[in-house]
Structure formats: C-alpha cells, structure tokens
Length: 140
Image (tube, rainbow, N blue to C red; front, side, top):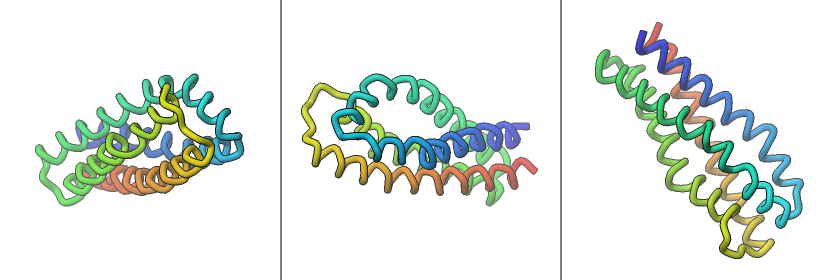
C-alpha cells in the first residue's frame, strides 16, 4: 500500500512538472522579461502551494517505502525523488523568488535566469519520471 501511495504521489508530481515544462516554460519564454517577473509575482505562490506539498509527500512516501521494503526500485525511487527536492530547493525555488521578488533583475538577467531555470527543471522532470517508474515497480 505504501509503495502504491508513493507511485501515485510521484506520478502526480512528475505529471505536474511535465506540464510546467511543456506548457508554462514556453509561455514564460514568450513573455517580455518585465511581464515574466510580474507573472511570477502574481502566480508563483499558488504554484508552490501545490508543488511543495506534492513534492514533500512524494519524497516522504518514497523514503518510507524504501525503508520498509529495501528493494532496489524503492531505493531508486527515494534517491530520484530526493534529487527532485534538492534541485527544487537549491536551484529552481531561489530563481522563483528572484523572478517574483523586490530585488531588481535586468531584462538580460531575467532571460539568463529563465534559461538556467529551464535546464534544471528538465533535470527535475527526468528525475521525477525515474522516481515514478521506480515507485511503480516497487509498489507492484
């Protein structure tokens, strides 16, 4: 049951990250930098209100499954989901705060930061999909 919960949560997380990568990132790239910063100021909090609990719950369920079952797939799910959390906390969320924050970002800095955000986000998507598949195998 725990493995199935991990698979469900990690599948939702991976799907949400995939949506962000396929739908929102191209939209953000199409915006002028000032509008992008405004979008983040208005909407990043709502996105985080969904993604943070989903990521934390997915990681917790994967870690619990790993500790209980100690299978290779459960360990892989826990490690990959920890990677998602790590990239989020260390790279993407600080960038989100810079986009939305009161500190001035030039248009060139905004474009460069979005490119960096996008590259790290696709790593998160890959780790999230890996975590999901491994959790499905572990919860089998």
